[in-house]
Image (tube, rainbow, N blue to C red; front, side, top):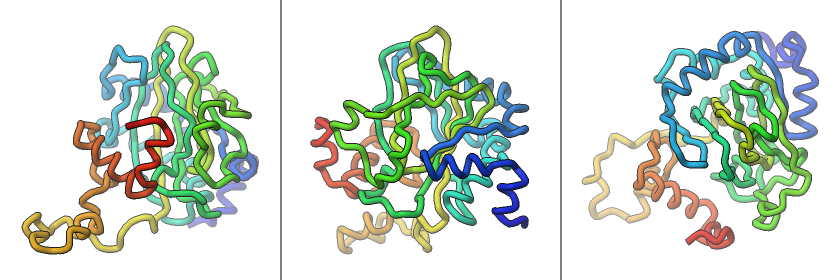
Length: 273
């Protein structure tokens, strides 16, 4: 397989690598995504049910819903930059589609390293890429990003979430891929114009961020009479790797996972009970 440095040069990604280092995010086009972007948009619309709420309707675990999604997550330039951020053998982690309409709803400022307390390690844990199927502008509800925030290696404070100093929109044309590392602070602007902002969200993670052994074959009866910490240790009480559908019990599992990582004060600091 061609070395990473050679692929970066061959694919013309030198400036994108520099932007990831400097700002924590970059924007690029790939021949494949330019070719399939309309099909991706149509597949998201078929897969993600429309809703009346201001918050963008989103559906997860959609890789098997349409063959076009497999083409998107294996885009050559994207995989090169994923390897640059996460090293060889990086794994695909999550695929979702969203449809944002006009309204006040927006996603608060955050870092995608949700499952790790600060300080983050010097090397990146994960990264997120968005395939733009509708032009990204502030008015259209583009992603909001704080350039350089990835160097802080922590989550934004409640004060920083309320007043994201230095925030700016990611402006990108149809077919572009916007890629950022898991440490950079970002959110989105509310959509101000008619229509929808349809986006494919793709996340990747380092290969080492998982247990070596899997004990899902052990039935619930195996835990009877044993230390009550064992279900947690074996991943029975975490949200990750469970193909969530965001039903009520999944939300409770999501919160329990955050509590294990950050403690209950995570929610108190954000005014959530």
